[in-house]
Length: 238
Image 1: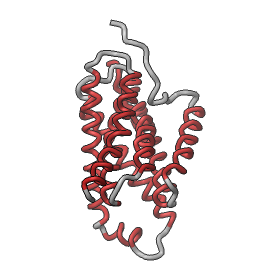
Image 2: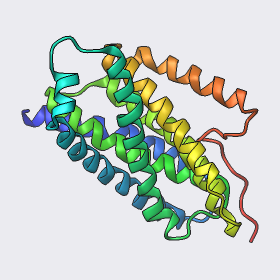
Image 3: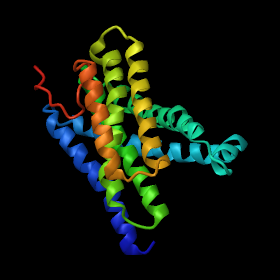
Image 4: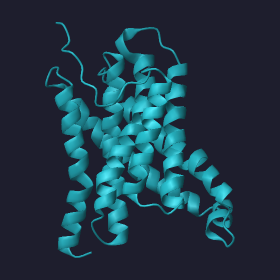
């Protein structure tokens, strides 16, 4: 890419994620030192996308993968299984690991909603790196990807963040099932999105309403059990 295209792709990769991150921080009306935890988790999310890139590059060299996905007569069922059973879980586990190794280890999870806040921060970092690589590979700015991918990554990771927050926050007795449930929900919806968009060949802005409908359906089905990632919180009592 030339300098102009490179600059636009960098801005397109970072700006939407940073704007969403700033909005999340503005809704978390607490001490300003929370910002450094958000920044660190965001950076860890960016690094986790690099790990995912090398993981999938390694996978593409495996004979089984090449036979199923790079050969002739591609099987849609196999593609769906790969999207939902490999890509979705791998990326969501890496994003969750970024939160555990940063915000959680530093003791930033004071209450359940913190799990959602920091998981969405990691997701936005992940989306920034993923968008940069995709735009670099295709040779320029992709407005659809720049606008949609950070948002959907944030929505998916909100589920695993809820599970982490319910399990670890507030010094309560740790429970494992919320982590597994949240990660399973995030992985499933992530895999569905990947299948519909990248394998089904649908454009980014077409899939965004589909993701939003899935999110509303699930949250209403659970009766508000999983909170929206952008929900603000009351100030903490000192």
